[in-house]
Length: 425
Image 1 (cartoon, rainbow, N blue to C red):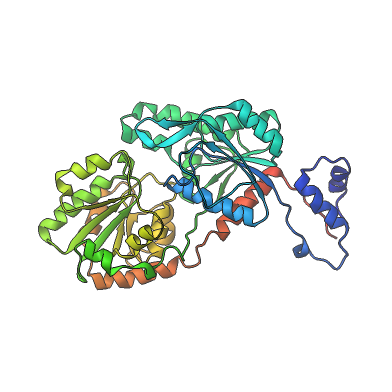
Image 2: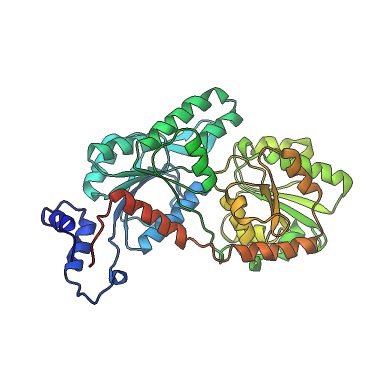
């Protein structure tokens, strides 16, 4: 029988609307039905974010995949975000609330949302969410938290960008402690914080976040990113023949990504092995002009931002992926590169730690040991050996789709809403 607690709540109509259907259906089940016959309750989820496609960054693209997955599971989405000039055509929420936007200083391609409390509050009143999930901790996220708490709506959060580490790379080291203190306060005022990796989980525990931390991983679309998109025509455009090793970087061109390390390593490699290696850099950002003007960048191919099949072809047409960043919460590009058939040179943490095996499908360097990382570039093997390792890399991620991360996030929401336990005996 259904527990007396659940029955009492149902009679008093105190459960979220999405759970009411669940309990009423339970009352109609016969004793021959098992727990697996039950459909999990569908939630009304308010997602609050200051970044969204077509902006190109790991947070926006991951959030798109998670929202698509939640919607396929039958959940309804209210999307609260800043206004954008371009429109995302890959997802349509059940309801949308757009606030005014403002460019972030030193990061003109990114923006934050104005704290329009009344507009956000009215959106909550209209949608009546079961949970509010705040993805970014800026002014819009803070406003959404206040509005949700005023209406006694459960709040969860996501930790995606280590802003306290970014500030070191923008001559803002004096802000590290205040930002860290604010992030602690923010996340400790939510009922659960979702993190993309165990490394991030441990880091947040280390600087004082005490709320429950749940790992919600990341996935990769192995149809979109695949060795089948390799293009000999593109390699020729890069002036590469069958014996040329193409080193590839994909991502933001920003100081915290340490792309200059790749450029300088490449320049040194050219003095020893001229014409055997090419460096291709895909992406844009506040560091683009400076990096391109470096004397060491002579011969480096800068493509700017790429999307869709152009991006997939760039990945698949390279031979090794090089990733010098040491401030990632995950590192989605590592999965994309592996799915495209590339071994990876990266630091031993987050995504790389989870998926790479040193000497098998890539090379790992201890965090902080830049000289070790550079040495891996200097010791790159032949194109043929890189291809063989790339096959191993591709095989490793074939089962790493987005289904599991969506289920992990869904489970975190159920935890926040506090689905009552049932007695089926």
